[in-house]
Length: 492
Image 1 (cartoon, one colour):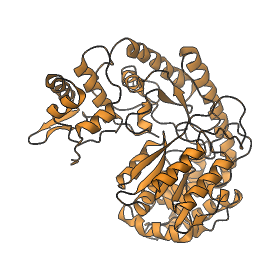
Image 2 (cartoon, rainbow, N blue to C red):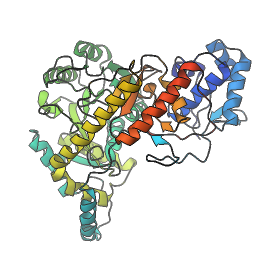
Image 3 (tube, rainbow, N blue to C red):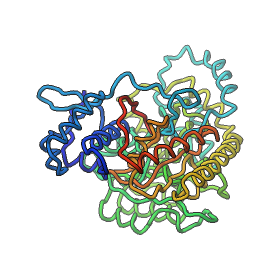
Image 4 (cartoon, one colour):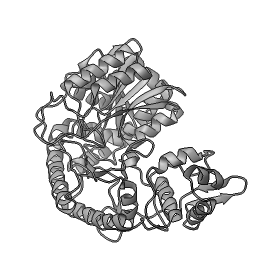
């Protein structure tokens, strides 16, 4: 069990705008439950004392007591002698289904099904595996021929890279966490976009960093070129954040940003790298979505090529992954950096894992040369998904704003009212799991947004939009219903 204690002030911030018509104790319980389901309140966390929370929220203690009782009865909290109310999940967790049947449709995952060439690659890799069986199987760095294949991909994009500049990881998430743990200390400042990928934000927080947010906005409708100035980043505000915060690290998603879909222009990249160099900031460019363009002419160069590769002790580190283009079940990611940085990361890696799965590395090594052809397959899938989301959301919710989606895996939809959390909660009663907008931000922000994936079939998307329509009617008319069971989804 966690020893974390949530203060009344912190919980008030997480709750955001939760009040509406109806019973306040039910609304409070519902919002706390959603925070647990979304992972914003970790399991094992001790909730604030009833008296403290009542004073902070300007409620009667009776209201808070009733809300906590509701959470306990539904299995979302336990009363622990001497510790008050501690968060937990009811068990067993719901079995999630993404297709058909009576299961829930899980739209917390913006991810594509496996590439069509994966089965053949997996069979060939299985036949290749016996050649590696005489070794121990513990591979902390990555198979040499896989690192060479990754290096070749960077060379094809114009960035000279040797295999010893590549470290293979268990997915991009491990890469983010490893970099954060290696380059951040408690109290260091880390620049991060808002909204952003939630699990990157969690990794930076776990390293003890203080997060410094910079705003990213969705791309506007209309034609788009690589040299657009209105790319979603206020570069002057970003430069000011570097000057004021002097961050130790900056985590960025420059291509088809998750969740907004925005892409940095070359000029923005140049100025960001220059600002980082001036302040000795390590730049981490997460390029896991870089290949997922739908209709953008050309592609951006790797991030380091827009400025000096490093400034003193401030390297530019790239993160890549097989999961977005090939398949989420292939938990293979990588880090590309200068040799001293890679050596430092290799030294830190054994504290959390002793090696990357061998068979999956063999599969990815076989598939990387096929990426250009696979990307064409993905482009058609994403184009169909984009048009389906745009059409169905436009027909069902004409007041919602669907941004231009030029690549990536989702649309960051403006829903017009600060009810994203309530909508996500109500949607569960109608068979849909979807991440509320605040899941992608700090302190309850982004209640006016909802991330809708463009990676599902037309039939699944139609089911999801229909569920959202039913949930929207509930959200607009009355408080969200309280459910008796739930599951804790990660967000991809």
